[in-house]
Image (cartoon, rainbow, N blue to C red):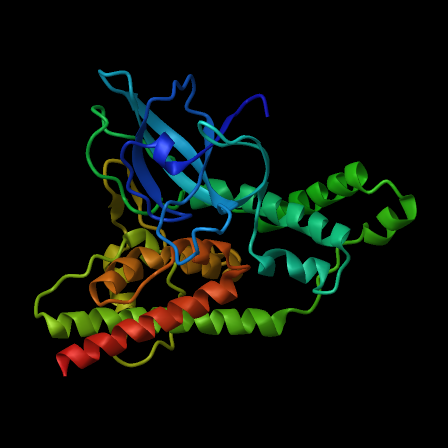
Length: 357
């Protein structure tokens, strides 16, 4: 890890100001910490209010954030541009005061990424190995999923709430899977000392999880339909109201031809084609399912399960529906998060219908 400077630090001590948009969002923040390189990964714990009792231990889940650019201010502080790229779990810490520093951290993929290889009843060593494989796969997709973003020269201005997709990347899904399997083999070699056990785990077998994937894709589709209904209801409640849907979020829309009558979000996407999106750093709009048909549908659904809250979280507050972001971060997988999104959108839509009459 010599090429990276790694910090785990609590929200209050690290940032004097920040706009946080969740695990896959982008933010601008400021710090007094001295930074010698832009190649930094920061583990930033969330600071959203939760329903936990005060006696509950501090959360061990947070967001892996990459600093893509920074500007040094006149007072010596740094304005950082960060991208939230992965969910992480703190395994152990070597310091707690005056701020926390982690000694061991793990990328924590959604269980739907690794369970098809381990099986739900697999031994612990198998689960650990397949989690490593899923984390490696996620790392290899990162070049496509996160366009490198920079700040304006004075460090000011706004940034998009989500990272643009890097549409210049040539995606080789087969090669990514081979590299992921190789990381699995390396982990076994280093970790499992018993030769018989290692031999029994050496072959990566994909268990039949098609039913679960079908359920997830149906949930994903329902989220989009409910989001579309919410936008139309809000327009009905206040004529001329424009609901800003991040173009990067629309890039996750599945390229289906059987959307229900009256569905409008696909027309939003059509209007964005051949246009550049973003704020200071712009890049061509990318509809993932069209530009990269080999992009895994579960990754698309997972990204939606994290990013949908950029819209629903804000609107839910306005209509009195509470959102516990830390609880969402700690859910085991995308199926649970998508179900929460469905429930939230249904509650919002029901409230708006009652107001509109």
